View 1 (cartoon, rainbow over the protein chains, first blue to last red):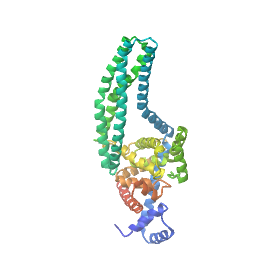
View 2 (spheres, helix red, strand yellow):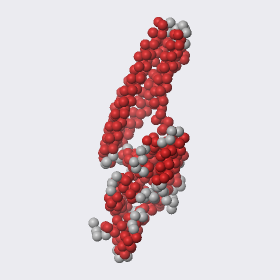
View 3 (cartoon, rainbow over the protein chains, first blue to last red):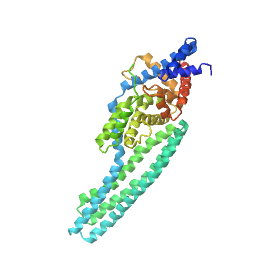
Length: 239
Length: 186
């Protein structure tokens, strides 16, 4: 530390418009006699100019329309999971009401309906229960993660460790992803079989009722073949 | 030199928040567009200085605006909008940088079509290399001060440190940057 440190800080303050007239006058008087501080001022200006011109070059090159379009794309992607779940739920309800309306019109005997409705009812209830449980769990989990992330951001090392932990957790979750298509496939088969046995007006009912299993099968395959390899790569890079 | 302004006055910020909290999605979209236009350049500049790479700066800026879009309507106004956005930018840029393989050199981006001649590109590379060798705290304070229109009070608020500490940190960062620049032959 040299004796000019106070003046060097004053140079920084003046460079950024935070020095008053008195301080500026004292600084000028010092600069007239100190070549080291004059050099410090010149260097500081040069560094600021370099940093600014560096970013201006970049700003000119960026395709802003593309960048904004990418933000929009991710926004849409973030909605795809809740939208898929909502659509599936709608499919179940539609299937249930179509079945019930056929039963009322006499197009379906109660025996036929009972061979079909219980599996639907149980599934509908299970899905609703699962969604509620998932919502409550994710709320609690998010609050804890936000607290942890804030703590981790206090240092770059902490942040790095946090990123690694997050990735490991996501990969662990995705490893169980094979259960999703394996669980959904029998549902799909059961739906088709029940519809066939009950001689329901097949196409519409099967399509509406098959949305959920198909959605989960797609989700499971996407996790296994797209998400998991990408997260593995990221984790390897971080390690 | 065209300055990259980091400022948005408080009245404009307040009007923007009213629109962002509005019930219609058109109002929300309009508020986001205004934020994007006002902050796209300073956010990108900040991300560039913190990540040291053009491609990563673009990725980080994209993530920043995604978070801003999702959080704007819920922003409670406890700090200025600019402070909030710069905090997100700093966090996101460091997260993006942390994901980069350690073996990768700091600056690998080729010069863009609009960049200046080779000498300027070399200077730019040296500057980013020197910045990359500084600690996260020093790099952040230098990057924030290189944005025009951001006062030391706002910088202190963004970093969550006392105003006096901002100047001493900037001074120390400047000294270290000068030493690093000398070592890379700037």
